[in-house]
Image 1 (tube, rainbow, N blue to C red):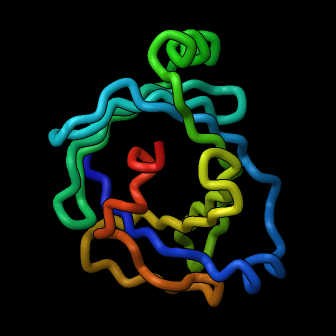
Image 2: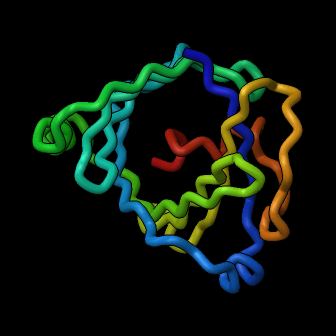
Length: 147
């Protein structure tokens, strides 16, 4: 399956004033990371996920995600992931598109990153006023490089 995703930094002052839904707690770690892609384990509230992502080609890449029992995900963390990311995710719908806004707890405390998934590379979307600089092509902002 193809994933087309754009990433943006968030203006913290404007974001602080936004009415937000209840956040989703996410813990994620990486089992494998190479030039071909990553294998990620994630706990998202009460569910576990195993995800394989290919290397990026611009804002596009292949992604395969499988729901697994939370207990198995927790066990995989203890075996494979010495380091992990913790964040709170807010899902906000703007003009029919879901913006995922991540407020990082660990390791980049107080860092905020917004993502939007698109159906095509050239799809038009509305940017909310709290969105700042686009960082889609900057590998420094890939979660897998935060550890």
